Image (cartoon, rainbow, N blue to C red; front, side, top):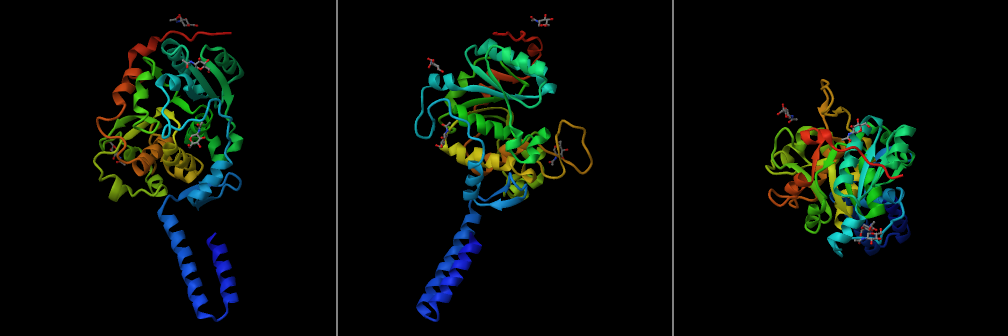
Length: 357
Ligand SMILES: *[C@@H]1O[C@H](CO)[C@@H](O)[C@H](O)[C@H]1NC(C)=O
Ligand SMILES: *[C@@H]1O[C@H](CO)[C@@H](O)[C@H](O)[C@H]1NC(C)=O
Ligand SMILES: *[C@@H]1O[C@H](CO)[C@@H](O)[C@H](O)[C@H]1NC(C)=O
Ligand SMILES: *[C@@H]1O[C@H](CO)[C@@H](O)[C@H](O)[C@H]1NC(C)=O
């Protein structure tokens, strides 16, 4: 765009000949053009990988929109929703909320228990399962489980190549974007999540948080906080100064990406979903060279990294600063309605899943 603008300006300048006033005016226009481009840089500049060529390059907000437009757009199943303009009743919102999860064979047993707790505590809530690699038998069994509305294939072919490597979790923001596009209200639950109650207590936070209700793990800088578990290159990529800015902030929410509640709003679409998806589309952002999952045995020279969760934490700091503060979050509500598989013995003997043929 800048190159095109310059070429046009040079042509016009040639045509303008030696007329000094016109010359001056064009000088100002060209200067203005560069200033505009500079200001654009100062705004939200995203780095993206082209789904076609696989090349990573910097792009403007406008270009991000263009790439977003080429992403799959499932048909919305309910009237469109934007909490920044209209807040439906909790009952209506609850009715359209889907529990969304994704599973491959290695997490299948764990996922059955998650489904069982939905059946127990939210008997009328539907579950959408994305298939990240299941056997035919598993697929068939899941499709028979009560509450499971659909098991669907995640179309890796529609995304850049690196998304096929499930270990970089790029699929998660992409699935969340797709499902949110379709249902307008989703509760993302990893296979490891167990429901203790209906998620209804989380709905009262929707309005204040523009439809994005995360589980904040900690506000303190400690070994659980985002910067400890994030490769420094991701901060660089997302334009956040880790050493001079981020680490010095005493109170920054670190959130969990294993359970997140979203209802659509323009604010969250722009400030969170889009840049999160843009990061997932660029391998250098979602999984910088030398990043390693903290659950694996440490390798010398590698830095612990939480991929999708790391990006979410940085974007909350960058674009939603001040929204979540100690005391105003949904932590207590989250803990009352859900838990992780491993930190509660009670979940060892969850009832078995039930089937509705
Ligand atoms: C979500 O909100 C955005 C911004 O208002 C809108 O363009 C989009 O259609 C909404 N999606 C749904 C599913 O309501
Ligand atoms: C929930 O939505 C279904 C359609 O999907 C509708 O039949 C039902 O009446 C709704 N229930 C409430 C409480 O809004
Ligand atoms: C993360 O926390 C651990 C344990 O407290 C500490 O040893 C390590 O140096 C920290 N890493 C970073 C990058 O801060
Ligand atoms: C669940 O199913 C397994 C095998 O299908 C069975 O052995 C077990 O007793 C069941 N548990 C409960 C609580 O029903």
